[in-house]
Image 1: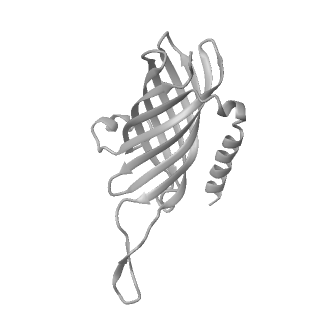
Image 2: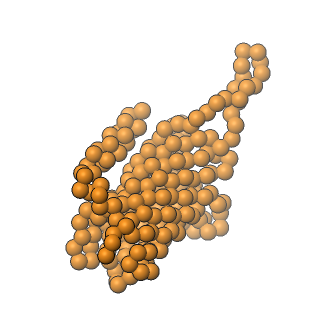
Image 3: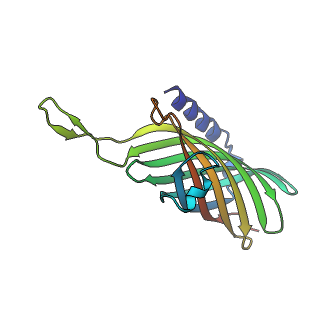
Length: 200
């Protein structure tokens, strides 16, 4: 419960920090899709290409805090969906602070540090024994959890309005099962597109 309060406060603080000026400066919208597998961070990366497929889709937006020459600081806001077969449906809602390095005319590299809320819903039916000795289905609307995400991205500008993105990350969900898996790690990879909202 304490973790949920901390995350709620962090998200609220982040939202309140959006002054009217920044709220009017959202610079892009994005759509990303890919795979998310439960595996140890970094070392589990190869499994993204041959192990189980768990769809991971994200929509988002963001703006630039500051930019000087080749360096920039950005903030993103994202809503996602992960389907882990037989385990859970996950809905992450999170914000990221991003350091971006413009590595060339069309290329940019990014390091993302994210924090947010994750709502998980069991992907299988659950039953419990009632007073009559019969099993009855439990209505389960899911549970509130926290999440943190570290990721690395490459961005390629097709033109002044459209960009292609590739993002590899490690997403930590918790508390998952306190007794033996307090933190559930996901390795994620997503390909996507960004549409600029800035008129040039």
